[in-house]
Image (cartoon, helix red, strand yellow):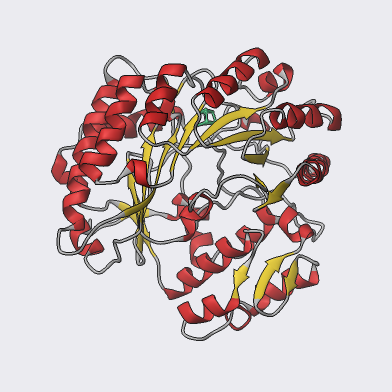
Length: 455
Ligand code: SF4
């Protein structure tokens, strides 16, 4: 349900940088992955990895509709029997992966998440089965760890929420995007506010400890007034978390026909609405965790969700999920276009168990990439990077020694606060997170992303 992206245009011709280049939620982006000719065996890949605090992610690639702004790996609807066949394949994959993790040392999952797509596209009975796969095949103790699940208002039904709550869900993220019916239509996510409010009521009734609400700014016709109205409608539910996403328009998506040229007026609108939203939430008792994420100051702590991509040791199951070891990030093939996605899902469900014992697409992570990734993903958090921790991880060197040009540029633009022990973005830098992230990509990753053939 979260919005994701591939990179947009770079710095504009006037020498200034558009604040909205790409949302870097994981590095390297999947468009830098390539087919792995040696198809390495997972048991060899995982043999030397720590396995006592892994993250588990299960990907459900189905949605009721395709929102106009969305480029996530998901298909619209599922013909008869496809969700069942998908869960069968997920079960085969979970079994194969768990076998590859081996028995020699204890395997423990510290966090779990169901994402998509829309996991609640599955029926209540299918969600039970999904939890069974996570527990009995992958080996996660769902009731003992933070479990985050994404849902849409229409699919957040009482029976599904009851299953999720009983099976240990600690965080439910609802993709609302806007409480204004006209704006929802403009974002090609038609929904009625009354239905959204009813869904929020059901989530609260299910007593899942953390409610997250996703909202989007920068929609056609959205004004300061309507944005504040959406924010206040969300605040009325006292959500423990709020994600405020700038709207992106990307190739091959429903709104993609408008993708392309720089649009300074739209950038200004988004920056204005961002600042308004940020200040409104700060004034209402929320703390800013990153450009997009705000957490209620008195909300219960929620484990590692926001940092899941920052750590190694991720097991992703499902045809759009990534897995991370220290030296390799891998997944299946990737696409944004509907036709291609359908083909990849169909291919996934037809795979025999043996196919899931190897990695097929991915990107090797060398020391330089590991440093970049650590810098990038720490810097994009409001609390920034702990320099001593960086030195301890990377042979005593500092970020300033490793990335002098990039960090000087950020400092010159007033985006970087360097207080010695921590390196962090200033409020202005945080507002420009989607420009900071891409500037830290390595030349090799940049080249691979540029050469990726969009499909
Ligand atoms: S509900 Fe919309 S935003 Fe969420 S994954 Fe599906 S299409 Fe994308």
